[in-house]
Length: 326
Image 1 (tube, rainbow, N blue to C red):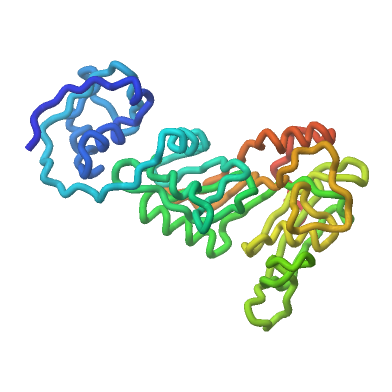
Image 2 (tube, rainbow, N blue to C red):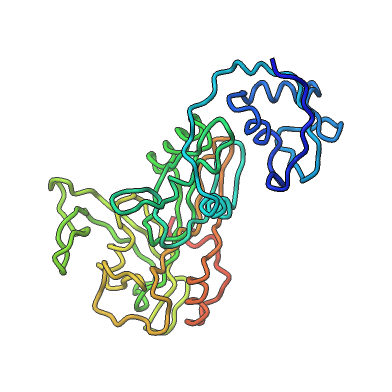
């Protein structure tokens, strides 16, 4: 058993949830024991009872009762450097007890691989509550910005993964494309597979039903705003989740995404715009592991807003973009 402790909150611990602060002080102490001690008033902040989600401030004094510290310690977790820890924490735009929603920047990989030592998955220990490290449940391409959700515990992770697998996750992307699509609304569909592109490099190509590795794909699109015939802001709703689906589909109908150097079409690039992929995971609606429905819109990144301003697109975007197509 430990002794009664009175500990002052440090400057680097400001705005930390009380339960996470306790777990950092006592690794391996379960959430259940913490909650019980809080309910009984055995844990106090500046002499007062507090809840698990109470945000501590620098200088506050936390009283911790004797705990059974014979609880086995959790395995040592990977260290995240201060820069990456601050970065991944700055991405958080929503959190509850079961999930995080991040605003992923363009240019940062979601997962590691050969030649990709820095990625979001490697930063997730910085978001640990002391008991679980958040887990990925879906992916975004390195150069795609926007909404990325994480499960905070095994049950929540399984629930979120099931929502994506069963297509109960309704995703809307925004893209700035070369040209102004006609018709203004439509569906792009067909079988996709990996193959060789025009520059003799591997990319997605059309396949045929029944062909080995060919998978069915379907995307709804609607034009939100146009800049004459040179460009448009397009909303996209993928009804399947194939690799590079949105980029491939748009290029194949002749309206490639601005800044995409892999999936191109026979149109001139938009001069003066940032040379970045103009594809943003804008909104997501799915069943919440906490009950009810989770629905979130993700703010546009600076390079995307800059391009919209340069093309004269309105900054306000309607939320019911696909209502007429449903």
